Length: 68
Image 1 (cartoon, one colour):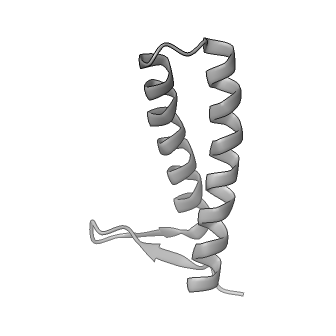
Image 2 (cartoon, one colour):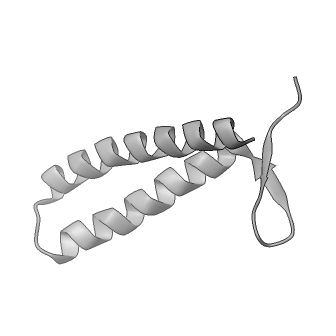
């Protein structure tokens, strides 16, 4: 089975798995920065960001697998 890839928009390609991981980590970091900026507690913010990062990464991965 060939490795499925997606175009990055910068003229290169990356694997579906790497793209999903990049989206999950990037969105989690931004979400954590937002939660801390509005004054949420650190522990609660880390827990919420961890859960949403996993869900978002899995959803993005599933969507890319179907599209590829």
